[in-house]
Length: 271
Ligand SMILES: NC(=O)c1ccc[n+]([C@@H]2O[C@H](COP(=O)([O-])OP(=O)(O)OC[C@H]3O[C@@H](n4cnc5c(N)ncnc54)[C@H](O)[C@@H]3O)[C@@H](O)[C@H]2O)c1
Image 1 (cartoon, rainbow, N blue to C red):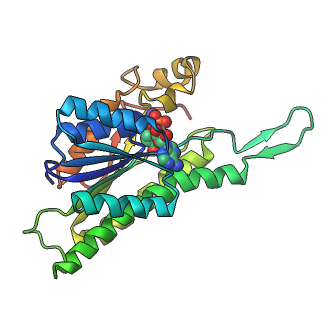
Image 2 (spheres, rainbow, N blue to C red):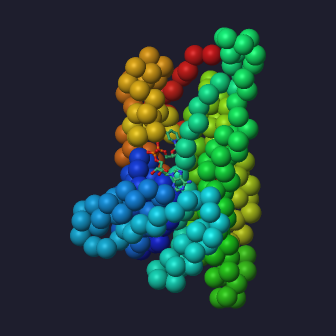
Image 3 (tube, helix red, strand yellow):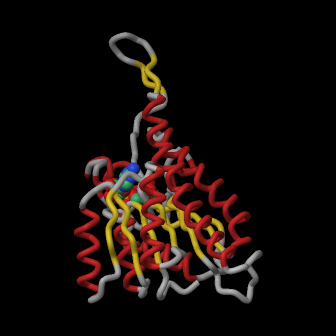
């Protein structure tokens, strides 16, 4: 699928991987790239992208991806002004790391991972990305129905691509009970949407990045990274955001690629 002249929505576009993907889509001549983020930083990122591109390609929409009205209003506005969205990279995500069970040394009682925190992580990392993806598929389906088109045929161009952002943590990671579950859950979403959405010509894949140099990973602290990340990464460095962005654009533009892509720099954690 050609990226050139397409309209893209990238959630989490105000930082890290989402920012790098937005930049790369603009470089590859997307018509419009909408950076969705709850942080105002998305405005600055969009300006920087536009300055580098020498045209107005990026714009920011600030809001919470878990807010259904924000999602539908964003699509309504973007579709009205730019046309059908055909690239969706729902990258907004959070971590709330803690062991599933911890013994409180003073009381001897077991403390369990708070269910409210689990629900928050599931809302942001699992349910919201799925609904941003489904929203795009729904708009494409409606547009096709309006044009009298039914099942997508291979002579047509691919109509859209969703790339979910998984993680190496989807295979399990100490201290990440909620995060790991959401990332593993996205695999099920990608596998299901792949089967359903191709009816409308939409492909769906998932990339599993390893530890990438973003504010999310830097927040773990230099010591943690040096002790627990770099020794178990074959490249012995953090992955650059532009490397993940390049891999995502490869997945979007090469329609023969399906399923999962591991971009983990040779991550081989101890048991
Ligand atoms: N950095 C890594 O090593 C790594 C590895 C694997 C997967 N990932 C995934 O990549 C994605 C991007 O992570 P990152 O490392 O770039 O993190 P980041 O913290 O740099 O960026 C995440 C962005 O998402 C936004 N965001 C979070 N919750 C939101 C919400 N509810 N509504 C709107 N915006 C929201 C934040 O404001 C932020 O700008 C996440 O899904 C993360 O789980 C990151």
